Length: 422
Length: 137
Image 1 (tube, each protein chain N blue to C red):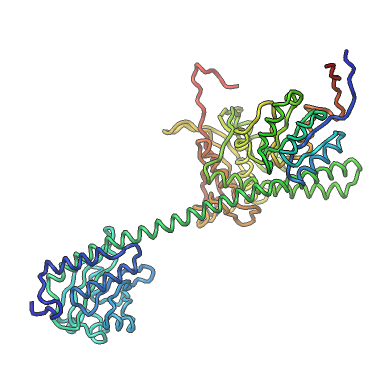
Image 2: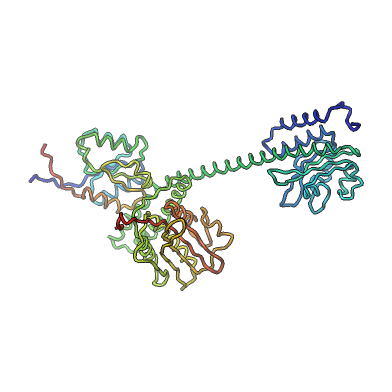
């Protein structure tokens, strides 16, 4: 008991623990850094230390960084010496505790050759206790108290500091959770705002586009009637631009609706094999550009316009990335798996393949690849359409081996009593 | 056999957007129709109440600045001379959303559309020179 300061009189260990706990519980722990500073200050006061620190490991620099330090002379000196940042490769007792998970107590740090010279000599630390700090079961750093006086701390102080470390771990966990949830909420509301903006914009753009398209068509009809070739060509070009604009607006509105969960289909009984053949036929510019392999008939329940949209997107993408003279392969078939029967449409090209850094993100919005015109929404919408049908759109690709897209649609199984579909 | 009166098909357009309205009106007139145009819902209702000659077809925009297009439709429905008139509803809303607002005895065309599309639809209900039996009542 001879190390107790005069100011605190002669408090029992129990009372000391209580005082510290009461103090810790009063800390408003919603933000990590201020909470850690307050905790370090409180600990240094109640344990009569010249310095208290909460070190947290930052993996990107492989360094233990003091995220909370007592506002004491030794604390400020530590900062000026740069000893608030401890590189793991330099070792030292704080690093040792962090790595081993075992607490450290010393009454003669000046004689400890395993401790950093800066701590021993420049800071003048004589006594120290260092305990590991875990957050949600993961070792994240260490808590430390130091004194310029030799033999200042006892084994009971070690247990005490370990109890404090538990509390700090909980506070940190909660503060980090709050930070993450706040950021996620902010991001979600930014997302919602962006989607609403897209909807409003696209909607407002439709009226002028209707008027513009209408006038273009009227010009075109007049040019045709009067045999004005030059005007006819110009108006046809204008019409193509207007239609491209219309597609972009429609894609934006579909995207916003998908995000808001308002996307709807009008499904009907469709011959997928025929639909696929027709779509390929409208896109073909030469006979061997797209090789089509389908059964005579394959009936599914689907929205034909939307499926056509998916096929057109997949085929134009495949063709764009296909080397000259090399065909794109389009196949339709069925597959029975554990999760049911599926109609499968595969679109395969033998181009350079999809780069590995893009592949995981290829179905995201606004992913414009090399040479893609437009907004980069085609695959995002295609996958949304597949899912809206209860199906899936997946891709297999590696560099140099082209890419295979697979559209899977649930197969409507008819019982014998239902008879055949039209 | 009742004598029929040869005259241009009459169309009432209710559309608030000046550009879209002008485009539709010009296109229809260019095809030989007799077109009148109101830019507000109240204007449409006033035409109905004034008791002038009823048109052969109404082209109605749902999203009007003053009152909803449905209210104009209700005004048409409530008037004995106007109730049988076919209505083409124009809307920027996608098919799914507009379905919920679909009015009986009307047909729907989604913006943006090509004028020939609208013209073809109009022709299903009234030709440019509409033959109509002269009312005996």
